[in-house]
Amino acid sequence: MEIDKEKIEKLILLLKEISEQKGNEWVRDFIVKIIFNSDLKIISNQIPSEISEIYELCVKNIIREQAEKFYENFKLIDLKEKLINDFVRMESFRRNDNFEDFCLAAFQQVEGIINNLSNEENYDIFIKLHKEKTHKAKNKITEKYEDQMLWQLIFNPELTDDEFHKKINKRIIEWEFIPKFKLFLFIYYFNKKVYNKHDFDSVFYLGNELYQARNLNHRGGNQTDWQKNTIKKVKNESGKYYFKFLGFLENLTTKINENLNQ
Image 1 (cartoon, rainbow, N blue to C red):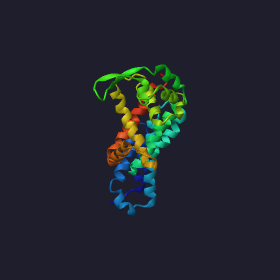
Image 2 (image 1 turned 90 degrees about the vertical axis):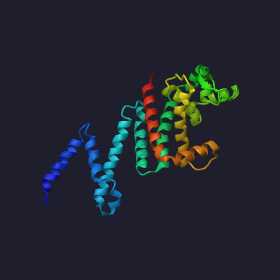
Image 3 (image 1 turned 120 degrees about the vertical axis):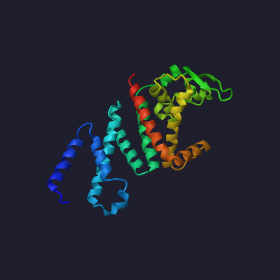
Image 4 (image 1 turned 120 degrees about the horizontal axis):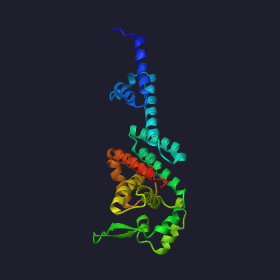
């Protein structure tokens, strides 16, 4: 069949114009999917380098657009560009099935948001004023739900008064990640209302698994048996955790954004 080169070029330009219109991003995605399908790896040696470069550029542009849309309405304006760049890195690592770097890039977004919020207000004052605010927590021995205070939710519930005051007198930015993460879950995810510690733990545990998984990229240091087992579990189920961590990141950023400035 004889191909009319001029007509094909016009068609390609038309499709490009259509795909750039708002709401028609699927056209470009579909073209990329059809042309560069799952057989790409098999025939990659037969594809001109220029086409491979165009394909990679298309994918990078798509990932960048996804990142910009993900953080499009995020209220921490000064942090958005870094978050977008980390999101691009995260998705690029996922595409290349690089789970270790994926976890690190995902965690860096969470850590960046938490650290940014840590500089905003005097949260130590908030804790001191609300440290005895209560919620229901299940007693591990009696298995009954009992009142637990806010400071016990954030720190080890067995802390002495002296230990508690030593921790609370530090600037929030100097806290270890876990209590800092718990504090901002309480304030910005749950909007300062936790009725049942089980609800809190269901969000915290997934975030903590991401925190531990980022250690796949941080060699060295002593680890507890629980940390070792968590890292092993996450690594062995990496196929599921790609999506678990993506869902966690979306859920966390959405809730935090909703409750900022309230």
